[in-house]
Length: 438
Image (cartoon, rainbow, N blue to C red; front, side, top):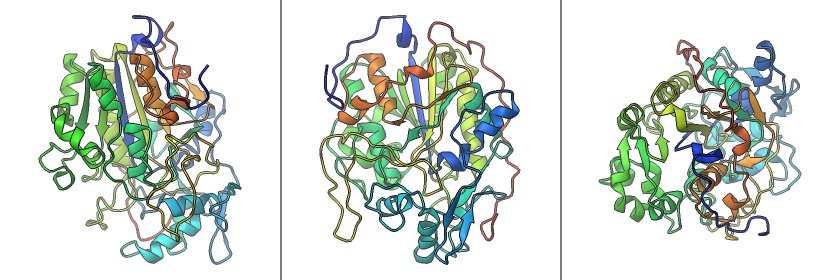
């Protein structure tokens, strides 16, 4: 037996049985929301619908100390928009332990402190210098589509971002199961990706792009992250990048690839990222309901299409954004033994053996277990493990090799959702303001 975290070689599964019944895997990452900020009330919602409240959600006494010595308690956001918060390396460590950020004694007491610091240093026209917004949450009234889907299908209350770092670093993990030593600023990495594994094995793949990003990718048709992280590979395989409109055609026409990744609406306010749509548009805030509505259309298109019968849609958020979560990060395997290459003596020391914070997860498939809640700790490189197991591919690094294969979320013998449920429409009428709380 290979030691934990060893890179794994795999055989293809038995055709037509178990995981081999999944022929299309679609993965989408939205932006910057913690489990407690979105699904902290999921257990209560389940109980209201006659199901066990078996979710480790937001504690009734959840709070954080403010810099002025007062206590900030969790509260229900009334606004669907908020000023930015941050999950960057130093702040992520400070959120886990405000006074000793390098410590593995995770007190989860620095969220308000780091949110206040961002308003004091960096946010344009700040309104929350105390950092109160870090303790806000949404519930099923605000996000009816997500709450319904997470309850009817499968979810987890132990699903983590791979690294204590911001989006770019965690999205490198999504494609390569490593950041190649990057802890603060992503640089182009010449490493294997899930896309190169699929390409070498002759397995179809495609990245669907919502918003074209001409600044980062030159003449590519807009793949922000493939072009940013793996430029040469991106240019050589530009034919695998398509506009999101192609996704809707593919699910209806039976031309969905074996593995697909959907890049969100980063420049049109549909990615759910706190703050403004872009740094250049801080006064045009992103709205969580707008993002959830956008995602609902993507998932519903798959559910009510000919492609549904043998597909799975994995939805998560690329990191927690600096929003409160009460569960400490988990210990993880270093992907490749590479230490951070971009930290200075002023930065919090550390390595890649602790995860980021929890993020929401929804697993949507005809084979997804009904009303299922996993409590198995994993980070979202487990998506890569699922792809590798399904298609008999080797692991990319020791990180994805160490992850569960996610088959616990499925019942391949008795699919519960051959006929999908009818989800509620996602409302978009909530107020959107930045100048006060709640």
